[in-house]
Amino acid sequence: MDGGGAMEADPFHNAKEDEHMDAQTFKAGKMKMIQPDSLKDPKLDKLKEQVLLGWINESLKAEHIVVQSVEEDLYDGLVLHHLLARFAGVHLTLEEMALTASAQIRKLEAVLEELDKRLEQQDTKWEVSLIHKKDLLATLHLLVAMVTRFQPEVELPSNVKVQVVVLEVSRTGIQSDVQTEVLTEDRGDNAQEVSDTNDPMEQLMEMEVKQTMAGVGLQVSDLDQQVWDLDQQVHSWKVSSFLFRTSGSPPTVMNTGSTMSAWP
Image 1 (cartoon, rainbow, N blue to C red):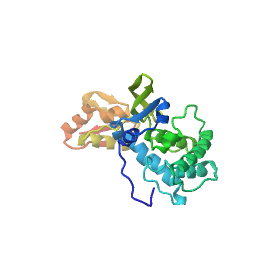
Image 2 (image 1 turned 120 degrees about the vertical axis):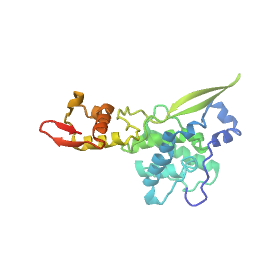
Image 3 (image 1 turned 60 degrees about the vertical axis):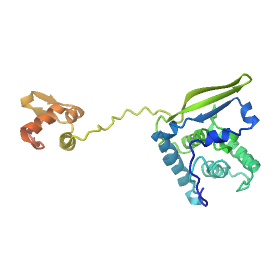
Image 4 (image 1 turned 90 degrees about the vertical axis):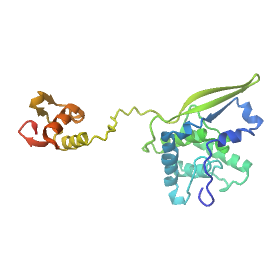
């Protein structure tokens, strides 16, 4: 958080901490670590650095709390406690600054217990020990659940997924597997992507048609072609190339009544 030198996020911090994991962690049976390649995903970066970080800072702006990293600044329970108070109206009798690990864990236990009651997740993907160890995957799951529950109008990036290495500890040894972990739901957006083109003639056609010919048929008699669909006429290379060859300049559109005719 603001007030000291911000630590630069280390994509391998989870692996470093796992080097000295205690016996209690291993008793849990499973550990998950985000693969380094997934940390470079632009959608994950947008979720983490723009949406979630921005949501926290905007929510706590009045309290002059500035979070610089979702990985580094939530482990002690202070920020989560303020978010709980802000959105659920729950003010726990806890020390504001928990300086020792045991005090931080006690604070996290109390805060997460209250959060879990309100988030109503059937299968929580976070726990006190993971949040305290700055586990990015668990922290992201928790924040996504909080945003979805407390401010559903906040638009999260759709269908954010990460590849995780799952380590399972048993008496026979350690087994590893790579799995896909879903962070945000697929909203099923079917919006058509904008065509990535640098063709100036097609861009001019798109501008002219969208501004003056929406919903109106385009007749090009020499081609014996009549286009009624707007998307088809915008992206029809036959039309744009014909107009370019015959006129050498963008077509002039003339209103002839019920149709719009392009003249060379």
